[in-house]
Amino acid sequence: MNLFISKAAASSSIKETGDAYSLIIMLVIFGLIFYFIILRPQQKRAKEHKKIIDSISKGDEVITTGGLIGYVTKVSETGYIIIALNDTYEVTIKRDFITSILPKGTIKSI
Image: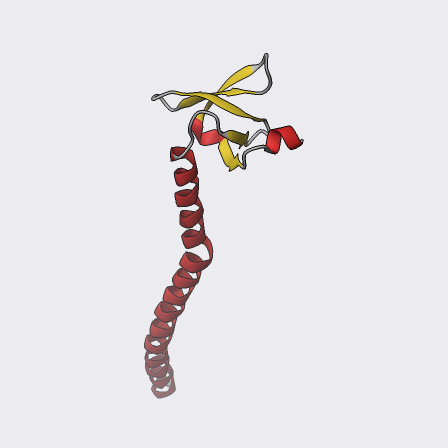
């Protein structure tokens, strides 16, 4: 009876080493999928957003994450910008909250 138990234990240890390699291969495959589907596109979007933020200048028409649309009247070195919503109202926001720069004449066409 002991003879059968030792054979079963020996055969299961050989199978476990094969499973360990397949587990490592699967983890690497899932890691690559995670990188190409989630991380890489997010890094691209962050890089494009940084280009947009760095290119903001006075007179640009912008839209914020809150949905405000206006003209940039002042760009400060501290990371804040002043946006004129109309002739009387101006808001100061952090530069990071600019979603996109609109084409010239967009505000007049709205």
